[in-house]
Amino acid sequence: MKQLCLASGLIAVLAACTTTSAKKDPVTPPVGPSTAPATQAAVPPRQVAPPKIALVLGGGGARGFAHVGVLRVLVQEKIPIDLIVGTSVGSLIGALYAANPDVFELEWKSFEIDKDDLFDYSIFSAKAGLVKGEAIKDFVRKNVKKQLIEQFPVRYIAVATDLNNGERVEFKSGPIVDAVRASVAIPGVFSPVRVNDRLLVDGGVVANIAVDTAKANGADIVIVSNISQRVVDYNVDDMLSTIMQSITIMMAEAATSQLQHADVVVSPDIGDVGTLDFSQKKRCTQAGIEATQAQIANIRAAIARYYTERGGVPPAAFVSVQPSP
Image (cartoon, rainbow, N blue to C red; front, side, top):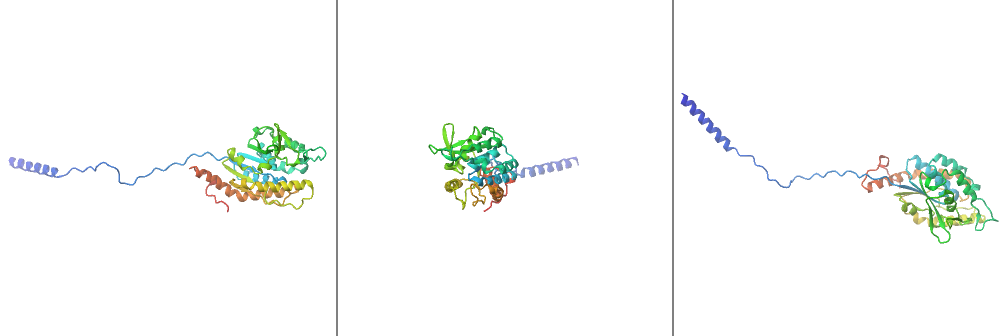
């Protein structure tokens, strides 16, 4: 009986060995390049520095009150302004704001401006202009909060023209009174002013809308307040108004090429306001407000485009903006 049990156990062991040897080892696949589609890692957006935004304020006499409305809307819509470039009356309004970026105080001060604050006629004493220019210097001293351009909280450039050689002169530092006095010196109306051994007149002679000045000084986006369009004035009846209207027409034509290089152009509907008509301050300001509101979508779109073109993500305020036609 014991032998029978041993025999049965031996047979069972042999059967188990046979079964185990019959099983094949698992085949390890050859190592090689994977045939599965590769998954590309998402590229994170770049960190893009905010754009430097410049506001260019053109010349146009009493129409310059429209610049106040433009600034009001930009501030309300939280459009940052890093640089203001002003020519002629644009240099005056720009100085008032850049020296003290408070749009409510700007409105208050600008509404106080009267014709006599800017035009001090002196036919007998003036050698090269009907207006001496001392009145506007007094106004700037009293109303511009800081008297040195380099002290302004907002970067500022006033544009003038060298009467002797036709060169553009840019005031980026120094006394604001000299900068504004030179920039507003309309030829034949204001006497030229000598600053740093240069005889200077209105910047509008060479650049009434100085878009290229803004770009050359680091602006990534340029917004223009253009008050030189539709130059219509049927009240030209004396020597001063004749000179002013003639210069306005020439400056409007010269500004065309500069406007083409701006990112956004705000054009208040004030073409029928005379350059010496200081009775329409409120209308000009309101026109500036309305024209800027109409361009806010385009301004936000320009800012968003700045980020996307550089591989960044625009801030939420500038996403999904539909520009106006």
